Length: 429
Image 1 (cartoon, rainbow, N blue to C red):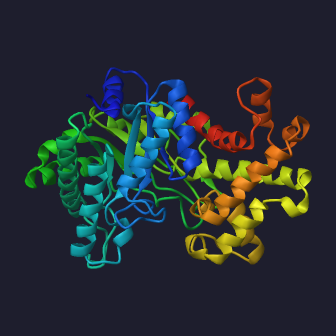
Image 2: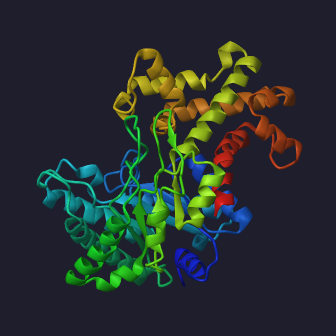
């Protein structure tokens, strides 16, 4: 069976304009609605877990790769979505979470990480060895070092795949993404003035160096499994800013892609781009569009609107107080936001709520916050939302309910906040 992303590349080689959104989130509501839309549209869905979310030590979700795979598989089966319609992916797999360790230890952990992802059934693997580890020499990491470490991880992934295939003969062969021009996972940590688009020569050097080094490492044929290279096409976001895609700035880079018909570009940090920008990116060869924080931002936005309606509808002593609960949990454990948000107390409070970086996503799945969310849903079922009030707080969802496209249920309204971002990606590809 051919991988759906290989089928996408076949179409692109035939001149058919197409691409795929990559939903990078461990949030269960995000995953549920992504799976549901895949079934409704009869199109495979690509769901990614990052190395810091899901790894052999549990990551910040507490899940190992096999746990995440089984969670998504159960959710797919619950809605009768076939397993081959879900493409599970591992993002930034490499030394990302072990940069403070020397190479021997960092790469040992990275090898195990990639092996576990492939062994669990993940079929799109981003081999990201672009970050330095503790005993790397000062200065930029050489592309050759990045490629050699990548070869080591490719071998680990294929070992995991072969073991899985022995148990499950129809297991899909994984495809790979390489590249060292990788934006910081989850958005910029500081305000930026400009973004440097990847130079065409740097892109060509990445591909040619990987081809040479992988051949030297005995996995030259592995380059046939590489379908994409991560580049910086000039998109990024931070607390309050979004760098919009500029086709003119990326024209030379995208022209260089035509020299390599077997690969496309993967764009990271495409969150908050306009629908037109996303469409242009796919047209220009950035066919895999990574999005993560924007999805939980949409969920958070919808939950805040529901919480505001709760304040008008539900007696004070019965309220879930979702907004206040989320902020209290973030204040009690600031490690996942304090390095990203800067300013006085008032500004920090605004960032915790509204920042495009959406560090709230690290907390929205914590038990206390989930309990407040579920109580909010229960309260708004007991005290139903009037349509006239819904129009005030959620006008887009209101219109869908009027048209019979959405149920007036608080949980469905919460997920519709996610859908509003997904629609831009669906139309772009």
